[in-house]
Image (cartoon, rainbow, N blue to C red):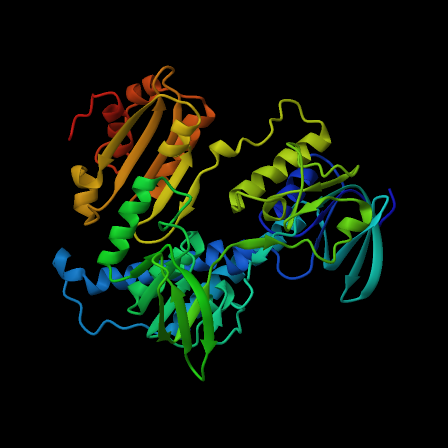
Length: 466
């Protein structure tokens, strides 16, 4: 095979692309990955990882300012925003370097540059060293997505921010408006509110975290409001007028009335759109619909030898979905036996606000709409010894089963460490576990995980500690 000819070429080195490249190399396929910016993509450099570093700082700050409840006296607690941001960037940098190491370890060729499909398995690359061309039998588009903007609500990078600017503030704003209450918006709202900013969250839907189960959304909103957040649901942003160091905001509420006030900064978190531009997709016949590449269950685009994975291929927009899609795609290409298409109903979703939110499978409403007769179990954090000992008694675990078969249809959680707990139910769904196996499983004591057991028991009128 010629030096510039490969079995698999991956465009984009985010959590979908780099995982696909590693798996392809493991399977003996000559592999190249092309990245125009950062190894690790948005998730590692400007998303999942650095935001968790920021949120960890806010959690520690909250613990220190409330340490008296644990018998610890701490005086003069303060924070240094420059150091907070520096740590977050160092965490991202360390992991980005780790991805580069993995490419070398797995003998994946790395090309820095902008890639464009040229047809017939050819890829034109515009890199730092000039233009070049490579060929590949299989091309995987893994270019990810970027923040979506709305007409009249464009970011300026100074007073009106996207997630990128929100992650590297030079100073702490005294007040800010967060537009959108999905995972990105609520995580930033939690970070800034915990550090003392006056935060208002605007959501066009009738509840925050609108993709979550209604009961969890309602629980979350009450928790956020107790923390001092102002939540405005059923509300649209009519106008943003940047001033010298502030933004005048005009909102339209559910009653049709408008209100205007001023905040120091605005964070736009109104969704994402796929990076489909300047790739030559339309030129080679790849179908793009509403900013995302259209694929089948094996990530095929309909153009022979061209595939797409991750955010660029549509929801759910999650790093772990992208990684798994990459593996499914590559193993199908390599002819690995026993490969299954990705079942999105088994993909957990996590929001790292305070309290944390996590879920997998159907909401209660979705289960009913799908025609299931259901049994629902609930267990509150305040009934769990470990939660009380941690000083984290605020939360709820909810499970939904098919009444006839005992199939676990969905699980929904809010509270401390639910982003770690949810994987138990994800495994249960993958194994097609019923309530019987979950009831017979022995959960360790004292742990938060005991609530998962109790929630299942509650669905069948067998709960012990409530």
